[in-house]
Length: 254
Image (cartoon, rainbow, N blue to C red; front, side, top):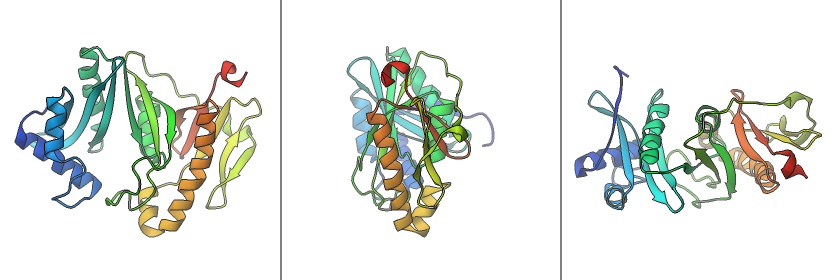
């Protein structure tokens, strides 16, 4: 970045085409097949949604798209930004939503991408509330690489302060699952209040180098997270060394 970025909503055809091309670059799709075509973005804006774009000088450096849902909720379809800009982009999206009366925002992300989990859960304070198996079907872009498209839904309380991250005593909890690399994949405490689950260091790089091993990680993490969410656990944090923290209340245990 060359200085402070400016963030604004985009409505014009040229601006939306630039956002579509930006998403295409991020997801490594052909120029004529961006993941969110400009005409789709234009329709979403016309329907009352918003496309926010971040500019580093004149250069487009981030963007996000959201639409309104019933019940004072906003759904964020996509967001991407250069390093250091993601928080500002999401806060601009949040301000737009709150200004129109929204109280919560939902979106999905690939649960195997630890850096995104940490951003969503630890930095923004969203909570993982739903596990979706192969949500989009096989995806052929340059990031997903034909992998099964499991997603974790997060819910962001737009009016609450970010809660402190409480990782719990992971090392004291018994191991419950073994990872594809032979190490511990998951732990669960004896009080049945916490589950911890590990993800690979860089799943995008692993998909390119060893797609079958990446798929084994997909299935292994799916088994842990899907079961935990079904039992009332919610993803509340991600450590710097790649471990999810999932928690549930005493009432959920009872």
